[in-house]
Length: 475
Image (cartoon, rainbow, N blue to C red):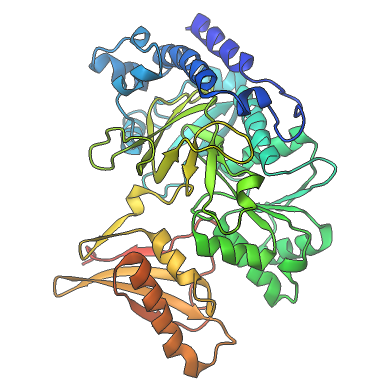
């Protein structure tokens, strides 16, 4: 296994140019970011061949999985062979942890590797399944820093111009750790706010003048409104870029508009997952974000990951241009080179050229939420992001809302709880509720019960939003 690992590390490093600094404007690594599709496929083919052999030799979970179907690592010669590898789901990992506590066998890090070159433990957020832990290495930290720096560079974040406030708790959730080390690599100072409450962070924005605010979209909404409550105006603050992840944001048009108006800043997004893509494996660029009246898209970092979309029922691949669930194969990790991991967010992959000049595929409209969050209400497929888009279009409604699905006399009932802003007069509440109802009917094709609550009733979102309660099977 040592020889295969050495070969894998060599491949990783050979395809990591400009490790310490950007080559120039507007690309960090132009040989990759403007590579032809043919060149990107060559890189993927080379990396995939070694990645499969490395995973087979160092990850017991994958060795068992391939042995069960009689697939040898050398049977995978190119991306064209990728479909021969079965998709891996979160549930399989949950079962693996239960059988092999506490770590499971789905990464290349055993106790010896962990003690010798381990870096840090991370855990899945537990949004859709039991939390699973992942041990990453010091090499992974270096890889993440480089990939995230490429994404931040595409967003126009620059040394000598920017500083960043990272509004997260520095706990086991993964995404802003890579951003922290990327900013270190880029020479961009950080205003650390991990142990600071939200009012303290609001004061940090006012006093220390960061130009980049990194957090979830929900928290950016919450923090901006908290600043207003404190007599501070986020729109006149130093923040020019909202760097968000963790939940749909830039792909929800009304949320994007509301956040950008609240902060008078550009909303950017990165996308990944703890299991296989802890870096900004997909990200927005400044050219697309500057086009406020056009749909957004996110660039796929195709030299580091292979992205597919599959049918939500059959898990069979769908053609480029057709919506499906996201599946990722990591070509960019020592610890967790996962093969065909079902991330499970809906998106549409497209080959359309981008005005920024980057040549890889893009996720049209971004990533719009997990299949696990999808509901069937009275025969209609409902996504929480669709309700969010509708609610955000009514300016008189505050930043928080709640979706509650119940069943009465065998009929599904969709209730959307919202809070009119304090300045909205009581005699206007009925009209506001009707407008919310109309927007939801228009965008979701369902008639909801709109329940108006006093402003401040719903819990404020300070991390990932939990806005859905499906109570249909509750006794």
